[in-house]
Image (cartoon, rainbow, N blue to C red):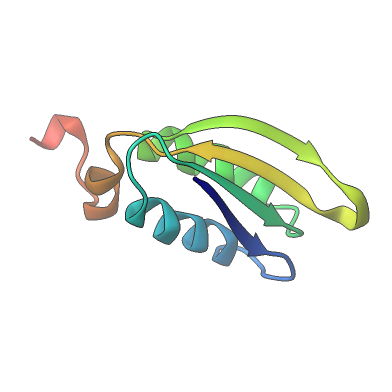
Length: 89
């Protein structure tokens, strides 16, 4: 499954919110590619992955200021969406 989230032209926090929505609807292990032009995505996406239990597999800069992130959906995505952490359970 190759899912692409095109968030070019969107400002923080919209790229991460779009990524989150797609990951929540994807099966565990699915890979999602995020395309973003907002410079804050370089900070926001790794932080979101670490907090949400996802894996940032790759990050690279493409032409025209586009940042590409490849994220693998982790097990704890529903917990992250609810605001709960494993310590809360």
